[in-house]
Length: 199
Image 1 (cartoon, helix red, strand yellow):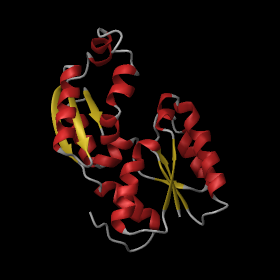
Image 2 (image 1 turned 90 degrees about the horizontal axis):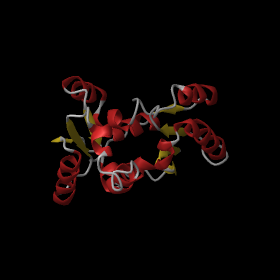
Image 3 (image 1 turned 60 degrees about the vertical axis):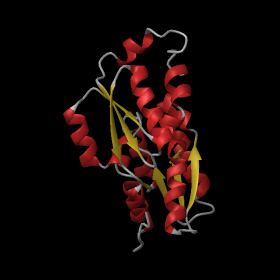
């Protein structure tokens, strides 16, 4: 079985697979930078699916809609492939109910995952030009009120970095430890086996 995934989930997917002892499951990732060009995601995933079919009996996709406007789901229906439930990684890492509650509490929330935290400087600060034009932070984040760190595998160093990221954007900080359970449940579903998540 192969999981075709967003590169932003590579570390987390491999952690679940290793912890669960699923040697039959392989992961193939597309570049996380595709999020900057969501119109390219659907065809990139389709190409991966078709290439994977020559070597794998089962294909599962670990992508949310991710800005494709429903195009990804339409393509997956055509290809007969299932994907992880949720509109984006924030929802399927936190769980739909938790994410909905967080969104209802404060619509002006910027979400940070372990991946986004690791690449915060490159993707947020340099990617949005804030390093060169600091005033852009207010334009991009002026309507946000808080940063919620959806932590999969937090440690003291990551918590310090997440708090610093919130401070840099002028946002209140909140920690939500999501762990890897929701991701593991999706892979159990994909397996269609009675397997246990060891995390």
